[in-house]
Amino acid sequence: MEKTLILLKPDAVIKGVCGQIIDRFEKRGFKIIGLKMLQLSKELAETHYQDHRNKPFFQELVTFIISGPLIAMVISGENSIKTARTMMGVTNPLDAAPGTIRGDFALNVRNNIIHGSDSLESAKKEIRTFFTDSELIS
Image (tube, rainbow, N blue to C red; front, top):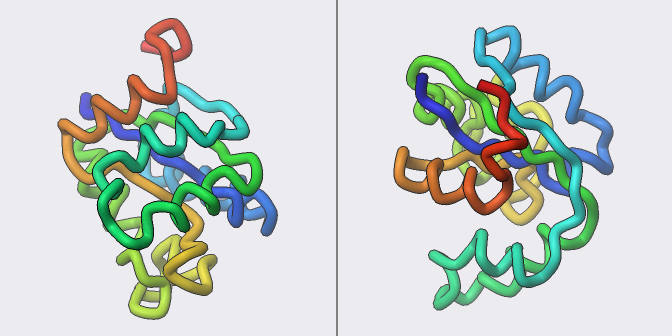
């Protein structure tokens, strides 16, 4: 089965909507094989966003993701990457359809509630960044 990383960002934790978001993935039929709450260090945040290092918004991404605790989870299921990203909605919540996670819970592009891996390669790399093998249930 395909695996992907999902991060419920600090704004999701602050708003208290993590349970509702996790529920959506479970109801869709995905199996949660890893789940933890953590406070990212600046170094881990920079590693996570390394593909954006040379973009003008890089520091803003890092500052936001370390501003509070987040929930990291790995879900497993058929077409988990594509399906999760569809469920999340487009990056800018103002353009996200109602019924998507961002369309229902996020207010702006900077605080957009959730991250999901965008490809199989990214998912493998991101899962290794946030979880050890022993933290995942097979």
